[in-house]
Length: 71
Image (tube, rainbow, N blue to C red; front, side, top):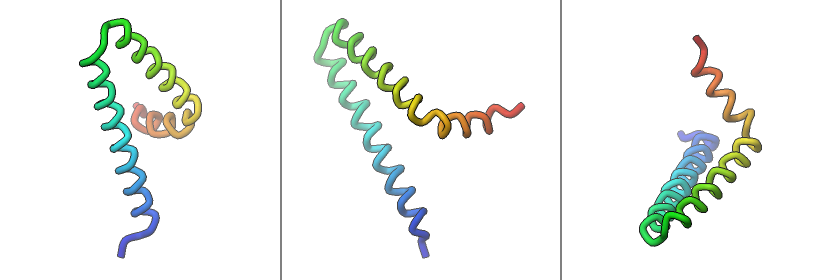
């Protein structure tokens, strides 16, 4: 029998994957239809969003990195 936490985790993972795919598809459409200035502007916005997200989830992101970086 499937554990409810496993199902919730699986649904969360699938939804996040769909969001990433849609973001890349949107980026592809922007790159195909726009000039270099627009591409640079979009890259700047995405980089600022990435910094904001990292600040919000810093502890959650640094934990697995520390486990992988053990030498």
